[in-house]
Length: 114
Image (cartoon, rainbow, N blue to C red; front, side, top):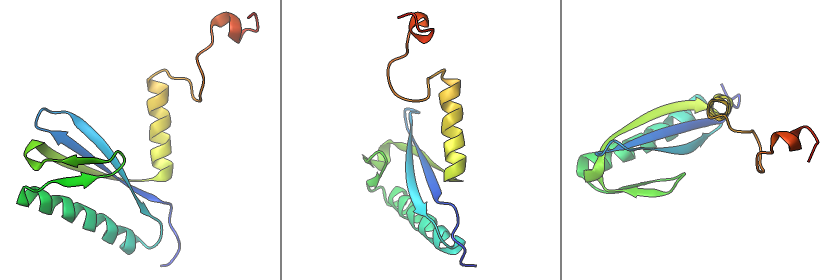
């Protein structure tokens, strides 16, 4: 099966000993499921090896280097871009934020009475 798939994202949630979570996103790309799976397994194996050896590891988006002695756990989630976009939209709606840029207007400005 060589049909390109939707871009796949690996979300890595690093929890510190203090309980603080930090999310990192890795674009696994598109293509065959086996190629995406290989890229995902390579990243997870590299993180697990670092944790086992007690060496530091670096994750992107945002770029942070972790000292393994401060890491409590690393959780993984795999999702497609469409699923991620829907999730982000839900978070924006839940936080009562306006979708877009700019400063929120006052009621008078919204009604054209500025």
